[in-house]
Amino acid sequence: MKKLMLGNEAVARGAYEAGCTIAAAYPGTPSTEITEYIAKYDEIYSEWSPNEKVALEVAIGASIGGARAICSMKHVGLNVAADPLFTVSYSGVNGGLVIMVADDPGMHSSQNEQDSRFYARSSKVPMLEPSDSQECKDFVKYAFEISEQFDCPVIVRLTTRVSHSQSSVEIGDKENFKLKDYVKDASKYVMMPAMARRRHVEVEKRMAALREFSNSSELNKIELDSEEVGIITSGISYQYVKEAAPNASILKIGMVHPIPEKMISEFASKVKILYVVEELEPFFENQILKMGIKVTGKQKLPVMGELNAQLIAEKLFDRKFEASQVQAGQPIPVRPPVMCPGCPHRGMYYVLKKLKLNVSGDIGCYTLGALPPNECMDTCICMGASIGVAHGMEKARGSEFRKNTVAVIGDSTFIHSGITGLIDVVYNKGNSTVMILDNSITGMTGHQHNPTTGFTIKGEPTRQVDLELLCKAVGIERVTVVDPFDVKELEKVVKAEIEADEPSVIISQRPCALLKSVKFEGSRKISREKCKTCRACMKIGCPAIVDKKDHLEINPALCVGCKLCTKVCSFDAIERMDS
Ligand SMILES: Cc1ncc(C[n+]2csc(CCOP(=O)(O)OP(=O)(O)O)c2C)c(N)n1
Image 1 (cartoon, protein in one colour):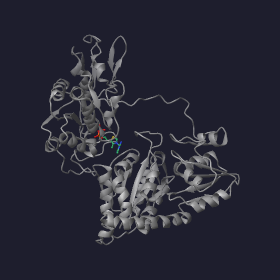
Image 2 (cartoon, helix red, strand yellow):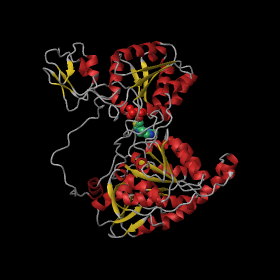
Image 3 (cartoon, rainbow, N blue to C red):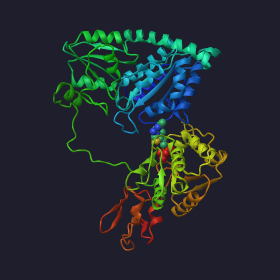
Image 4 (cartoon, helix red, strand yellow):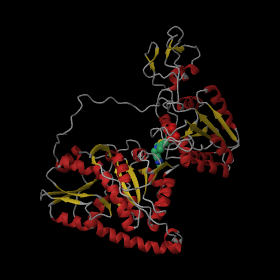
């Protein structure tokens, strides 16, 4: 039976068919749906872990315990999980261990554009890269087999377009994988220097064996056609190449690390001009050049952003390309990202902007506070960074600066990697004020549960981390819980906490407006009689409030009735729709 599937959905199906029974992940676009789909299979234990490092550790434990395990993350998540990755490469596995990583060329939803293929190389772990949904499923199954055959984790790399496009997939049966025996073996699983030195020798032997395997593996395919032009490519770029150069000979690399060197040499000898088409870094290109083979790639193609068929046709063949897809007659209107109507972060930013504070920011929906109309976030580096950065600023610039600074961090991000920053502030005698924006969900990535929400990935009730107690336990004595829509109270609390000569936490608590449980009273309107057009309500930056120059209006299609605007209006001019 065939089914139309997203790449990420097909990965989940592959894990299921391979008899995988354990899945751990931390959400991150474009990888999130992999685990959301896996969670639908009752045969697979699945979890949202607090961060990617823990997710990989859980999967490692499951693998050593004899199960087939998968963990998934976006590219920056692999930075977080890099520590266990480099060492599990040495210890190897018991049950197959597959690490899904989704890169985001073009940065549709990421803070950088890193190329995860280098992780495979530097951690000495094989990496596969599918080009469509069918391959997503097939390659995941292959990956489990390779993992067990070569005693190593296997990374499967996706990119946004493979993760998020649909194509047909042949559905197969579930393999009856039996839990392997658990065998105590400290020389393999306890990586201290004496053992690790011996394991490193095994890793090098394994890489040599994998290089041979890559040359004969059906994961890599030569499609011979023109003797003039040959293109080496992989992943989504393969699809673009097929469209841009239908007559070119192609070497499609499915095992991107280690590359099939013999196959590449053979392919190169069959064509006059050789190109490499790969998104982001010249990963294949540099290795092929090092083999002494003349090849053109990044001289003509960009190292930034995504490729597409037009770009390849123009840059490599100097040829205008007729796109096969129907072009929209009208350009798509620009829709700047904006916090949703009713978003609890809006009340918080209204206050921070009013107080003209420096804001050490973090990653989540609240990062939108850096953009107009709020424009009040000063820094945003990576998940969990806000607290350490605020602490560093205080140490660099002293207490006067600190008294004008707060760190803001979401609930999921705080648990992910903010808590260690807070511990650092306490331990190293900092006085930062940290605002934990507890909206009862991991908002940015589409509403995943996390340890503070009280529910598991399957929606089952579980123990809930008590943020207030947690902060107190690490040594913060000043912990205040405030509703960010009570802007007067929030302003009072922020002023008091930044003034205090000790570290403090403000838990800004109000659920995300998009949660099903959140009910508002219905949209509001602005009374033309009472409104003095002072525009105080515009300061909250709500997309539902429209400035018509001579008067202000609320767009009833956008207004959810959160009433934040009523709190900043001094003339009682904002009323119920039916009043
Ligand atoms: C290392 C890493 N993992 C995952 C992500 C993807 N990501 C961006 S924001 C975010 C969650 C933010 O949730 P929360 O802190 O609760 O804030 P909210 O969006 O709910 O306001 C995630 C998972 C990332 N940017 N970096």
